[in-house]
Amino acid sequence: MTAAAPTSRPRSPRRSLLLTESLNRILREARGKRGSKGRPITLGLIVDSTAERAFGVLLAFLCLPFLTPIPLPLVSIPFGIALFLLGLQVAVQKTKPWLPAFMLNMRLPLRLTSGLLKFTARIFRPLERFIHPRLGFMENSAGKVVAGVALALDGIFLALPWPPGIPCTNAIPAWMALIKILGLTERDGAALLGGSILSYGALAAFVIAVFLIAH
Image (cartoon, rainbow, N blue to C red; front, side, top):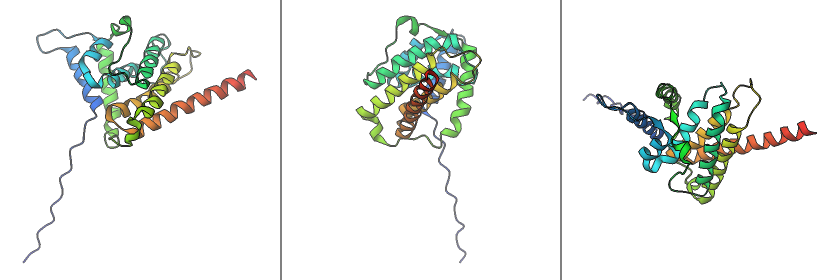
């Protein structure tokens, strides 16, 4: 008798991140169906379209324009304030995000947003292998406080009027926030914890730098 040839186990399909799916859904709504007019991309549209994932998706949209090294000082101030407000709401465990009406009605350019989403999708693709639910203790009240305050700190760093010409002054807090946002949307406690450590470390470095300059 001849031994049966070993059968190769089929690879499980790569899981798309929930955040990526939500971002793409919003982009499809903004473009509209064929023959129909789409909706302008606003923070209010994001809240209305994403239901229980509104916090994570809204936070991600606030970070998207700042993922490149080029600083956007005038834009970063309102976006940083919004990130600060939402971070505090994560800390107190609000179920639905709140922002002032003028922020909810701010329009994001469709072409720019589409390009940023494609850029983000390329970045997220390798992360799909590593981001997954774990470290459930970061989902409890204390963990949400730690992560929410860290997001609020990222908002402060994003809104600070840094001297012009310094690269990555917007990108660093945006990326620190995005790590935690992935943790929120994908229930990944390791991303929440790691991103929070980065934010508190940045605060410590900032305080030490100010102290050394002052003295």
